[in-house]
Amino acid sequence: MKLTQKVGPRHRPLRQGPSGTGVGTAFGTFGELLQGVLPERDGDFLVTLPVARWTRATFRPDPGSTDLVVRPAQKQKALRLARMIVEEAEQTTGGLLTVNSVIPEGKGLASSSADLVATARAVGQALHLRMPASRIERLLARIEPTDGVLYRGIVAFHHRTVRLRAVLGSLPAMAVIGIDEGGAVDTVDFNRIPKPFTAADRQQYARLLDRLTVAIRSRDLAEVGRVATRSALMNQALRYKRSLEPMRDICREVGGLGVAVGHSGTTLGVLLDTADPAYTHRATAAAQACTELAGNVAVYRTLSFPNTLCTEPALPVPV
Image (cartoon, rainbow, N blue to C red; front, side):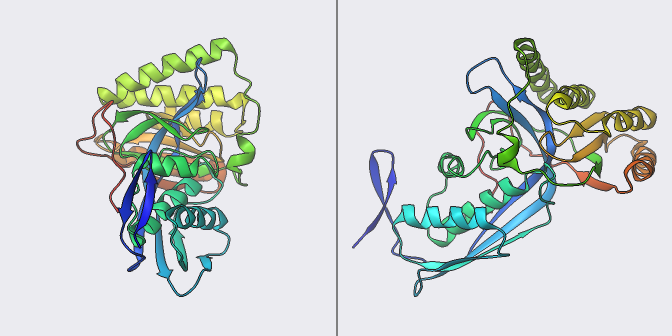
């Protein structure tokens, strides 16, 4: 008997059952370059800032069992997604899902989104299921608001409805000298908060998105930094960060590009151009000042994606 996978109105045959361990990866983000609400319906959006922090998921099917288990046990959203994929594929199998991540949780760094995307890729690979971005989006929309980490490059993404808006392109590598104000934020709870933004604010977000789109296309890091800082300031009405003004002071003192924040999290960071001849001096000064301010500092590197063009459809990051 052939197993079938529903794809729109058609049914495509799948291979018979699982055959080995699947592996999936996904990167995190340092907050967002821009996040807010546009004038249109379904206007909640964000623009990603991919960084070199990763989640790696592995799925080992067990055809002799119907129990799905996740390690560590608290990764319950990933377990729920794995169950959804197995049930949708109409395959009878249990298995072990293992999620390993170096992305801090609850900080606005897309840890949950990375867990879910890596899980979808791992389970799909193990069960020989096609996992295009559109299918992953559909599945994730049933779980929680999600970041755009399943796409290469910097993307504008409707996180509440889990829908790609546009691929904006890629930028030269930057460093983010970051601090954490402490605590954790639940993504689902945060997205239930009513947005305080006015019609004028929504128009300003649209202008900021236009500016950012042009800046990414022209690889204008200074303008990227200005837009990120403005977005951080506007977000104070929704999730106030006591360290924002001191971080802006540090940015000015060291000659940084701007300040990026986890809009729904607890992180803030000074953006630096790693190609700047004075980068080492600026990074050292920023790290020292951040340590004095918050008692903690972490350095992140942003990801660049060769051959990622503005407005071109994006492919999932290879696993």
